[in-house]
Amino acid sequence: MDFLHGRVRVLVGDITEQRVDAIVNAANSSLLGGGGVDGAIHRRGGPAILAACEELRRTRYPDGLPTGQAVITTAGALPARYVIHTVGPVWGREAGREAELLAACYANSLALAVAHGLAVVAFPSISTGAFGYPQAEAAEVASQAISTFLLHEAGTVRLTPDARPLEEVRLVFFSQQAADEFLRHQRFAV
Image (cartoon, rainbow, N blue to C red; front, side, top):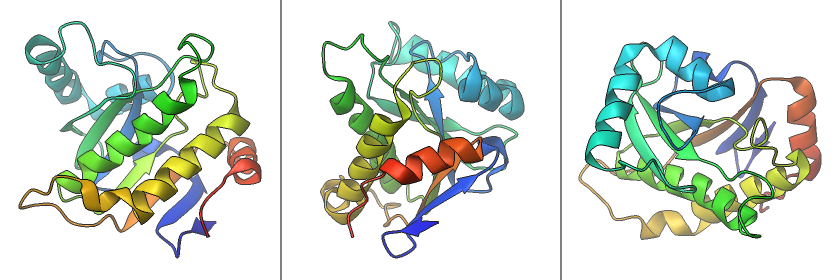
């Protein structure tokens, strides 16, 4: 299903198989791999992703990537060019800031994509797995954050020589049930 005149697509599949400019990784703050989407991306992408993440930890984020922030690395052996790593909020552990932090994951990831001249980005459902964010609430936050960015905030990204508008944002769900739940609760702007 498509939204925002085809700029957002919702589909079911394996995010590690997406042939896009960047896959977004629902990372943990260590950036060193984990379970779920994070583990799958690291396994399929191979050691180049881990090496890039280790370098980020050594040089920029010795205490780990803060929740809501995003960084970009190589995609290693993945069919994508890059991986954008973002740390979603853990439900019930963010002092009521869960929605704000989840929206920041999407906005910061999209801003990195624009700044690096990327046209197509694929997202998993951030924080709805092991981090326990309820799918219905996450659908509302994600769809609103993506809508806001695509319709308004993209023009505020500091442009580099490679910057260009995003052509497509894919929301890739592992199961039809998760995709259906998202579609029932999404709030994309018309």
